[in-house]
Length: 333
Image (cartoon, rainbow, N blue to C red; front, side):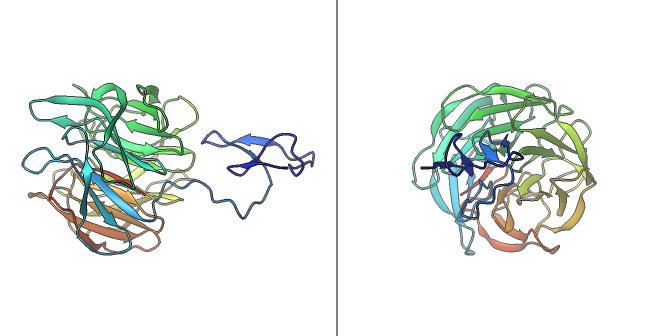
């Protein structure tokens, strides 16, 4: 009898490949797979959601603890899905296959946080404490592998280059997972199957850098190209093949959506516009479309808009958040 685990086969099993050219290799998520083995029944891990988007925390004349939930398939106003454990903004979002996570953040007069919150995608409850970041910080961005969340850069009295890593399965303090190529905050986070990416950000002045780092090894991120324009406080979405950086600020509000490849190191290309130029928005990733929610453009925004990964067009309105706010954390299921 053969037992299959995430497209891998246990050593010594009867139908494991026997050809001398086949060998085991380790994927970025830590699973072992046989090279050259086709398995059409296997559905690999995907960072993208197919059902719902969630926006947690933010600022709307005061700090917000609300977790909003909206359907990817229908254009409606988001509904309340519970609360994060501490109301705060400038939070980073990470997604496992079952739960959403918010990390770091800030409250006026209350300083910065190292809190990692966890909430279920399928039940409406207050989030629970899931450990702490290695540092207190705000203005970081999030990236997610199949098993871990990563918090990228941020501000902690000064801009930092730290990449924090924490396990989705256990409540422990995050560990240092290397550094971005430059210390900066208010970046946009992106997730591929084996690598995380951080684009844009504030390094005084703003940055156009796209960094890439390996989920499997603790190393400094490498320069992966540049955006079409330097800016900060943009937000990231991810298809299975490309990263998208939306909005931002650099002396004015941006509506630009940039697109860059996860597999080649090149300058990003213009991929259309979000419906309202703004910054401090949340990015959410569905299998075929990117979503941007909330933000600030002189006033707080409740706009949820969507754009296609495959076509270069202006985003379409997809409904509204329950509360207009900026700097919520975006996750998806």
